[in-house]
Length: 409
Ligand code: CTP
Image (cartoon, rainbow, N blue to C red):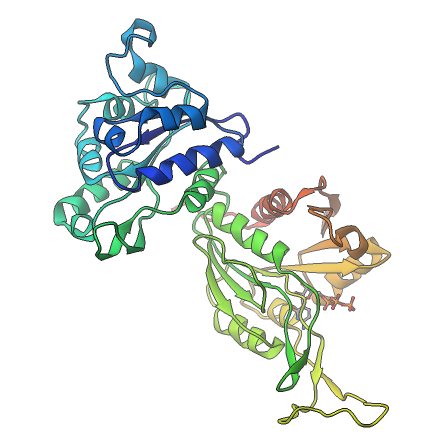
């Protein structure tokens, strides 16, 4: 099962240098399982020809409102009715202005106007519209564009980016289209239920590193991948996510605020500083239980045949958070080598946690797939084994179901 399995996406490409990145986006969408039909505006076709998009999508490319290939000459209806989403990348300033005002003077704007919206009579479902603006910084900052973007957001259009950086015109600033990989992540997220909308989630991930001397330290082999997958899944579910991370070689997931730390004590301080107002705390980090009692300012030289390290206990971050009167919903991890149920449940009770995610370390080693069991007051819940991201989304769904309901406003 891929992230966009069976989804049908109509991809609009308007006029902008970033149109070349849309070609890569078509490829990524296809790889993720989506069926892609490309609609090019006249200006878009000046940057990349229909042949490229046809080859990459494997489908005919549409440019003309009056295309005789469409049944009843209604390409705009055909391309919006059975689409699961319309994505426009790049979306030029001119295109955004036109849809903000409900204009329908070419195929792409017409099909955007004609897309089904839930709640409107006759529409059985919603066809979300996602736009990825791409323009020069002056155009992006222009009050006219600002007004148009406000209108589009109010109308429920999902705006992806833009990012900031070097622009084709030689200037630097906001208005740069997101990279195809970033767009893909946001498109995948748009199809997932916003189970944690308006919630705040704090996580720890990765190993800690406890320095021993200027070149050595105590650490462990945690890759951080499960913590990062959970952070991404929480962000996809609409939460505001902060990830306190030990040293790992992973990029922060999109939209996740990452705080880098090295030692357990730094991780502890970073968590405590950010705890107020959090709805969920998930301790995924493999925190070193002990650190060297002394840091040797100079490199420890070999010489003696035996060396004894004096270690002192580190704070237990999760246990400390879980006993606070203002604690968020606390989730722990238990990586065990045997007796998973007994040890994980004992950990849950010892730390007073509503939920523990347990796994057997030998089942995790070197595997792409994860196998975990959730332990809560209702008992044990084995999750279907699967890729880390899929398992992370299931854990987040379980957490969301445990959250106290909010009083209606
Ligand atoms: N944890 C923490 N701070 C620590 C140690 C652990 O926040 N100093 C969190 C981990 O992020 C994880 C859970 O507590 O969620 C793991 O519990 P722990 O009892 O420390 O597990 P192990 O270290 O595996 O315990 P043991 O060695 O006894 O199995």
